[in-house]
Image (tube, rainbow, N blue to C red):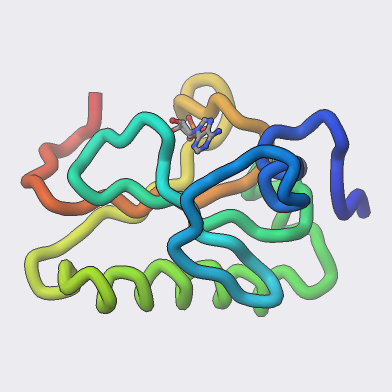
Length: 120
Ligand code: AMP
Ligand code: ZN
């Protein structure tokens, strides 16, 4: 299983080669501010292990524990930013119809405004 891809934007952020605003971290993941925020709070929870999407990620041997860490990071940030009462959205875009543009799994945390359903 590939752990890092030198051509991957998020792997390069994880390696410190490209700057990002870090909002949280664990031994398994990094939380950064989205460069083009779609809501007052828009963070990306990124696993340190490179996987192109949620399907590839879940094929990893320790995937359930890694996924739990990603969710825990998102919930910790929601609590820290005090949006756990007003609400938020977690989203995993997958593939072209899912709107995925970066081929390294990430979870969006969006909050700070009402969000309609379904998303556009
Ligand atoms: P997705 O479209 O689900 O693949 O999400 C990719 C997200 O990465 C988008 O919301 C982009 O705005 C965001 N993004 C792209 N480049 C960067 C960057 N250098 N730093 C932080 N976020 C980025
Ligand atoms: Zn990557």
